[in-house]
Amino acid sequence: MAKHIFVTGGVVSSLGKGITAASLGQLLKARGYKVTMQKMDPYLNVDPGTMSPFQHGEVFVTEDGHEGDLDLGHYERFIDENLSRESNFTQGSIYQTLIARERRGDFLGGTVQVIPHVTEAIKERIHRAAEQSGADIVISEIGGTIGDIEGLPFIEAARQFKKEAGPGNVLFVHVTLVPYIAAAHEVKTKPTQHSVKELRSLGVQPDFIVCRSDHEITDGVREKIALFCDVDTDDVLACPDAPSIYEVPISLYEQGFDISALAKMGLAPRKIKLAPWRAFLKAKDACSGDLDIAVVGKYVSLPDAYLSINEALVAAGIAAGRHVNVHLIDGEELTDKNAEKVLGAMDGILVPGGFGARAFEGKIAAARYARENNVPFLGICLGLQAAVCSFARDVCGLEGATSAEFADAAPEGTPLVIDLMPEQEDVEDKGGTMRLGAYPCKVVPGTRAAAAYGEPIVYERHRHRYEVNNAYRDALVEGGLVISGLSPDERLVEMIELPDHPFFVASQAHPEFKSRPTNPHPLFRAFVEAANERKGA
Image 1: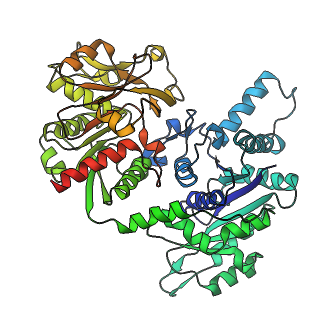
Image 2 (image 1 turned 120 degrees about the horizontal axis):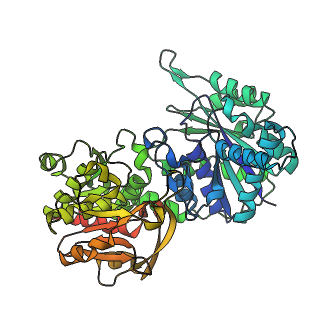
Image 3 (image 1 turned 90 degrees about the vertical axis):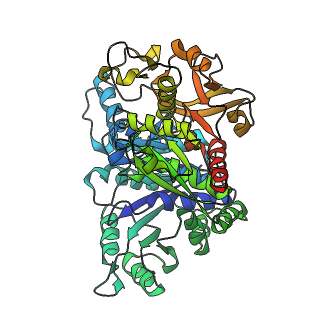
């Protein structure tokens, strides 16, 4: 039977519950246990797929095509395991399923209630994550903050889960803010006390309290929290702000978090293997010199909208021995006229994915500038489509070439070099209707993509509706565009590149989702290496 750890948050949101959970997962995996992770979100959206990146950050895509919370990206990067659709669910998806069952008459006319029906459905999803992963330990993060009305069913479900699982099988970790009050020159424990009091009023006693702060948490502060919250002092952990999120596992390890958690679950403290993680941190600290990479997007007011891209660039930079400075450029403001001013000092240009016409012309301008000025370029999803449109306009003479996604704003007869997949033509709902998840790509030998991957067939995760229009494929190839990746049946263009360029590669997929701190993605490594060569030129 799997052991379960529930992670809750107190006082305020955005404390770093996900990083805390992922760090514990990393330590437990390093001790030889099979770990999986899960995010339970109390909001009523069915999934984050239709939520604005301005509010929610990026949508992370799993191998099996689930559009999930960005915390899944942290989980995968820290525990180096591919998660699945069982790793993320929302209250909206729970209610959607229950209401569909009620409409079918599955409850035989009985009253459908939060307890037991919603809580039972939540517990079923927790069990399913354990069963389908075969994990020894399941770490489940409950989104939101203790006291949120929408989070109550999840706390109640977790309370019931612990009671049913029996002693030693379930732990609770409460991550809470310990604020520093400048006027008093001290950190204050009262918010944490009230947060734990609220949690205990719901029937849950935390086994561990992780104290987040921008100041030092002294032993005296830990002792005070332990006394008021009825936990051992050693189980109150200090987690002050760190220079890098990747240093958090080591900080928690040095406080014995993983050993204590294993002891409470009755599991042996196997020898830990932290050498790869420590080597990564050592390489990070040894980096010298900077690389400036422009990310030309449309959601630049919230950096979390490009979280996985940022982390993939940082990891590739560390592998190259460089600090990567990511510059978020608003594609809506970028034009051919100001491209030199905005992008001239950049060592590389990356155009990420996105939806909607806004900023698309700016992305085309970015691809054009990179192509004409020999600046290393990496296009991702819509970034590939922008690169193709730019090439079609400038090299192939297809004036105004654009995507069918934006055809309504284009003059009649405009070449649609990017078009809808045939099976998507009659789809109206926006949720879960795209090519999602891992698909195979046949890499063409002799290309930059082949040199980067070193494998003939690769699998990358997708999240899009539109593809390169095969009606224009021959014209693009005749103009000099190299198609370096294709679906196995050669019907779909997966990657393109330019032969006479330092590095100009674009992928219809999202390689950033498979990058790891200790194993940067091949395309990102090749891109950053090209940027590094340009820097040294």
